[in-house]
Length: 371
Image 1 (cartoon, rainbow, N blue to C red):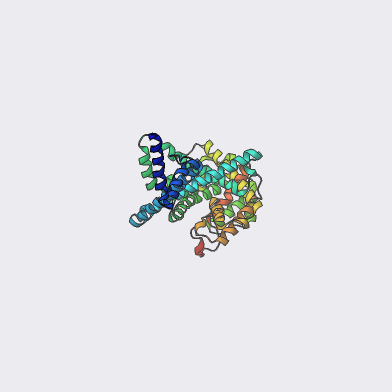
Image 2: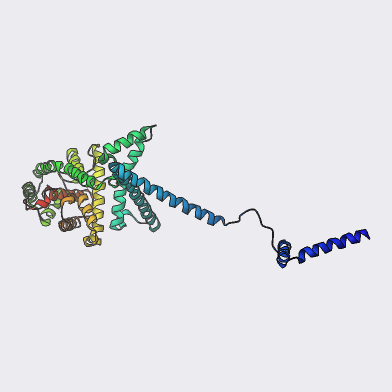
């Protein structure tokens, strides 16, 4: 009985407490019913791993760009000369990497389609030719950087001798013009020696008519007269046999021709002959591909590069004159046979003669850079 009374008294007290206000009743009911309907919360936060990685990468990239921009502004404000060198170096790395990827794509296409070098388009052939020269220069820098602590000396040498050690991607716009003028000066030094060799060899030509024509052409070139394409093509037989055939050239003649082509002249005669032949072969293949494409499809920069490769200092020549000169060159080159050495030798003799005095008008100031 006592126990029942206690239970009834507790129930009455509980009921009175609950009935004392509807707000309390509703609050108690929500508090009791909540755990029955809701699942228990986990202390761990479940997110998608891919979303986390993307957000992290985006955050890092944004912060890196902001820091890089601040760093560039600081360098440009306080160290303008160093900033110019820094930006040139970064852009050079990017352009060289882009050239490497394009060269890799071209080589992959050649392998898939079973193509040879001379079967490529003009732009692909020119890109591979130039990239091979550039990567050879870069490999030389890499080799001299192998010894311990030599890389610090290499950076100093690249700063002091950018023309000799760096490719054109790492040259400033002013350096590109100055260095091309210097290289063209090297070519001009060999012109007189080459003309002298031609005069001496003309006395050994068996055909009297060809001998007279060759002497007359050398005289015109030395006097500054621009020979026509017909005058040059009339002498093609002189460069097929003795004494001007490719296999009969002397070491001094090959060194002069190598210097005129911006090739290393300090090699043994067999290597000089092989390198001259391979270089003139590539130029002849480029000429045929360019003739097939047409000079009208080239950009002004491509025209200037093509003219400079073939001997014209195009940095100080107008675009129209460069296209005219290139058209004359292609007319002569495509009229020759497809190598062997005699045709290659003939093509370069044309190049040297036209380069010696480009236009008959000596008062034309636009051509002073070519002379």
